Image (cartoon, rainbow over all chains, first blue to last red; front, side, top):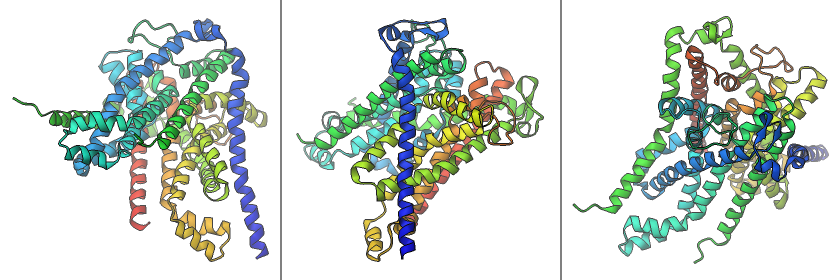
Amino acid sequence: MVKQKWGDRLGTGFIWAIPLTITAIFLWIIGDVFWHGLGQINWQFLFTAPIDAGRSGGIAPILVSTAWILLICMGVSLPLGIGTAVLLVEFSDIKTGFGQLIRRSLDTLAGVPSIVFGLFGNALFVKVFGLGFSILSGGLTLACMVLPLLIRSTEEGLRAVPQSYRLGAASLGISQTKTLWHLILPAAMPGFVAGFVLGIGRAIAETAALIFTSGYVDRMPSSWLDSGRSLSIHIYDLAMNISNGNANAYGTATVLITLLLMINALTSWIGATWTNHHFKF
Amino acid sequence: MHLNPDLILLWLVRGLGTISAILVLLILLFLFKEAFPVLREVGIGAFFFDAVWQPTKGKFNLLPMILGTLWTTLGAMILATPLGILSAIFCQFYAPDFLAKLYRRLLELLAGIPSVVYGFWGLLVLVPMINRIQPPGASVLAGILILTLMILPTIALIADASFAKVPTSYLTGSQALGISQWGMVWGVAVPAAKSGLMTAGILATGRALGETMAVLMVCGNVVKTPTGLFDPVRTLTANIALEMAYALGDHRSALFVSGLMLMVVVIGLIAVAEWVVAEGKNYG
């Protein structure tokens, strides 16, 4: 009995040690980036172009390119994602064959490595569509990548809408299209917003899928067909290919992590407001 | 003719759904289309039995990179699986509620850190530390440690969710029998959550196999079969990322072959995960 008690205590100690270690490493990574990076950040850094391959100067064109890539990514994936989620939830009579097929292929899509998305984007958008290394190619590639995430979140939003809404509307003889537009979609809004924010978070963190779709060019893009460098590629390039690029890489990483933390806070705020005001009208 | 808006809506979402559904097929199709020229020319055997990887000279031995991917993934799984599952056990059975919530948030944040930031930190902090033990520092070990950090949240969060699904009656029942906390966790909760834990491991393996930027930045990228933990190594993904920018003709085609290999393995893993989930439902 005594022996078992000691074993239990040892086990408990071990189990507390692991989260403590992981928390420490997390703080180490974030702390290291902010410690070296915060000093780099000022208006000049955010609003001027990189000088000398990024060793000095700022990241203005990179912020603009990143924003364009995200805009295209979300602009394409949002209608696709919402349409697919509506199909999966609201027209569930086809749950049997087609619905299952879509679900299965989305599960697979969610597991495809980002570098493979990059290869695909290069083969289809860059070569076959002839878009070249461009913001458009990069945005379209990322749209394919965030799609499963977006659909999952929108689906959850739609499923959270009480069935009584649909039945009530149907009993009043309101058409399915009107029910969807005036009743279901507004009620499922938190799901779309959460999916939108999660999708942006995933897309802004991506590097491998962009290297050979949106390309490396660090000039201010003048159109969607220009190559544009994202924040994440800028960090990679400064760290790996540019000697003495680390200071500005830290600065860029600080900007990227700050954006991600803001996105994360926004997501949990949406989650919290959603559960608190759950369909109180 | 009167057009029924409900019918238009149905066909609209069917159309959009079809596009989403065929994306995976499109990816496979285009990988195969680009890989086909070199596969037809030299056959699949060349990728395993050629003397070296010199794609511009028609030598396509991918084996060092395949082994690189294999060792780093295997190492990371060996470290991350127990750590992730124990993290989940902490959240479910040991931590007070507020700490469990806090730790879950932290794991979500860890999962959201971009791989390029992990790689950057690894390059500037981890690699110099390993270099002090044994040069050059950029090594299999560095890759394993970074990958462990990256896939641990995946394992922990899925394991946590599957522990939460274990019926409370199992746990209260075992407590009523006077079994210790440790005994309850390992004797009751872990076996009951088995299929969820296996799914966590499989999905994390897929992530580790496909991870590119972080391993590219810390592994040294030398094309040579590693003989120890401190040897530099190049993974399949890093090879694609490094060479795709200038690859032409057969070289480019060969890189698509390696992408196709990754894709096939990942599809296989997902199929196994689905099978495990289905089995779990049958016997759970």
